[in-house]
Length: 324
Ligand code: PBG
Ligand code: ZN
Image 1: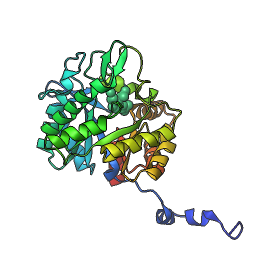
Image 2 (image 1 turned 30 degrees about the vertical axis):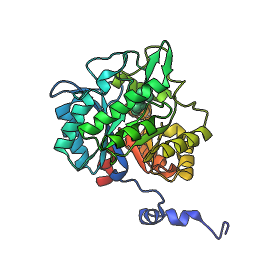
Image 3 (image 1 turned 180 degrees about the horizontal axis):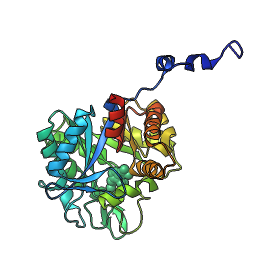
Image 4 (image 1 turned 90 degrees about the horizontal axis):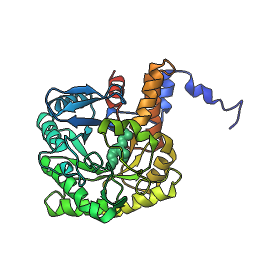
């Protein structure tokens, strides 16, 4: 059927018609809200690189999680900014570590909410790398035990799900084994499977003080030029026991989300990362973009590409619009 017999505009003529043929629907159910925990009490310190986001002490992070829950957001992912760092990142797997405290506080205040933890060492090591450093080399196998200890200590604090973001080979299997062995076989793993070596993490690294002190992350995070490799990484994580596969960043990698969605039969998450958020915030502040519309368009696009869930700093703002 061709013009003039077929006229696509007929079905765009009213909002009711557009609603009837809409293929992608966003919902607060799709969102996972990232939160940053710091020491102290009653702290809500604005993060300059992420306007509208804050460093929260444990008491305030629980209150923030509760607000998100009341907006219909089912899950948070917690990041920690520790008081001290050392070569082995010991505060990442300390029983009284900042994330462990935050998990307990959120579970105490909002028991039904899904509390996910980011499992990595970079915010806790003095060199800022995601694994153990031997000279200037990141030692893959020596990192696995520390990552598994971190995941286990999060589970012991009450985390409902752990999300390894370090990109060491074999870490999903190592974490699965250690959780299973210690009585946490019910705790799912959301694997940052296709995590690219991206400049879009800039604002996050400022927020988490997790930038590498030497070199970069190119020897463990993926080359932005590769897509087949993302499917291979995801396949390995499925075999090692992942429950959710993540692609990160989202916006410059919509093709990767689409491919992973087609090739892998597990839920797919996409991380709408700090730089993607900051770009929209900055342009809106300059008066160059309509923030709310660009936000909703971006999140819709990530879902349309194939993401079943979206980690996003926009979660509460977008949920408010969807609930209105
Ligand atoms: C830690 C981690 C990072 C992000 C999530 N977990 C930073 C990095 O890998 O350098 C980035 C999140 C964002 O930019 O919003 N490995
Ligand atoms: Zn890291």
